[in-house]
Image (cartoon, rainbow, N blue to C red):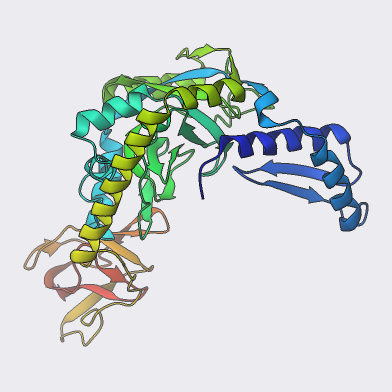
Length: 385
């Protein structure tokens, strides 16, 4: 399946035409990259009638070559390889899949699988790209799914397998040929390269966020990133939801006919880039196969040693929830007080402390970092004092 911007334009035109037709029973429309979901009341509008009307409407749509749509250029600050993005990578390596091809660095993985010379080449490609917003809300709360207009900027990656259990809000990454800004904290699979400012504002109205439109971006906006430090981004993120960080936004248009002409004029160099990129992709996949990394099966079970007998004069401290052990904070022989945190479990996108319910001395550690555990598993055995 090829990425075809003309199909996205056709979906957009169909959505506009269906909206303008004011069909009885129409509830709402949700556009995808290549599809349009229509939510309607079947007691008011029969499906057969709806399909007939849609065929009539689609037959009257103009070709993509005749279409020009509003297209703002929105300049967003990007903290390259931001510490929060690095933390997400590190937690994944420690807790989920230590030998994943994209560990320890997603940026190195992006470089390798696209055949680029070094990390600077990855950075230059991303900062030179103009990302066309094809969809909104893919990762919740106005999150854009965008692709570079110039195919020579269109870096391609596989997604995490299995997915990350945690991604920081507004982390930025690549999955397939798409760039996404995560609208909220949560799981994820895109290869991360940085972090930016908020794309959604629930509570406040500012020059770019309104009560009727709490999301920042529109379909067919073009995103351009510019580099900032982690400290500068931290300040921007604190100010932006309150209207204290002005954005540079330029009004403009996107003409598909002009875009096609640009592609034709650069066809040779685009073809050469794609050929080199595909060769690097195949080399990377072959390396996975040779190293046994081409497939991964999640082991939902837990190994031996998390239950068993508790020695006389001792008591076990159990996990209250299923999850992965992120950190063990004690060692054998250490004395702990009631309420002390013994370990931290990552579960359901949260970090949950495992605490001692009585004082004791650590007699046995039955699970270490990265271990899958079930509710009720004994993690630490304490000797009574």
